[in-house]
Length: 423
Image (cartoon, rainbow, N blue to C red):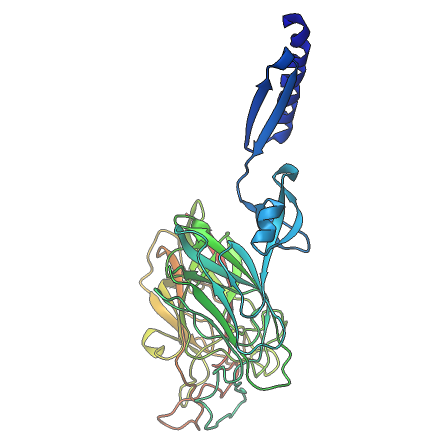
């Protein structure tokens, strides 16, 4: 009997060994039970386990690896395989009114629901940050202003307000997102996760507006730096990149006279300190020509009465501004040149005005002055964007300034480059 059973045993375990080699990184639990009758019959029961990790599905969608049965029971859609064929890449998409606690979920436009809301719950107790990437996002924009040489009006209280469509995300135990509208494709938001579910809500007003949105929601566990530091609404990684205020036309090559930033914004944008980098510099994406059809990609706040449009800093920035702690200048004159590791006597913390400029002496004067680079070595790298509720649009007098008068306008917002600097 021993000789007769040896080939069967060898064949059986060889088969198991080959299978185990083929499984690669898939975690398997194999059990076998021998039927001792005649010593010849075996039955193999295999229990296959794999992690529910992120995976790539079809049509540029990401999902989570589940068994096909689990995917169906969670109301997901199978899109390709994972775990070396033992699982399916399960894609989760929500229509208006939907609820999800899955790590990777897409919020999609569906029907004519108004308001259109989505409930996003933590997928585990160890989730600290929830990120929304706007794959596409275009809804009705804010009430716009129009920059011109001598613009004045009484509608400053409405400029920048999302009066037709709105989008926001609640955070029951933390800070909710600002209210935004307009064009925001390519932008993102990250919120500190709450134990209570988050409500992402669109509210549409009026007719005749073509709207579209597709938002990817990703959840990050506590300690995962990809989620960014607490309190940062936006988080950027890499040595170089670009960032912009919400509703900025980042896909356009020119900045028209009606480009308008949103009102009532107050949030932090954070930048990861990459290895070997000790400072970060910012500069406008578009220099422009200070003309109505080609403004630069920065403009926040007033033009002072009786003066040319110019850049402002610190105490001159009390309504709309960027706060860059420890900002130094990376431009001539040499006495003000930024050098990593040294501290210039010329330091500002708020930047505003009509040009991204470190000195209020930088005015239009027929030339292009949006060429400065403003740097900081204050860490962590963080920029705060603040706008108030109203724009100043009255006729310029000895005591009244105006945010629409003169090019570039003070209602633009910003679109900036960033570049980390070597230590």
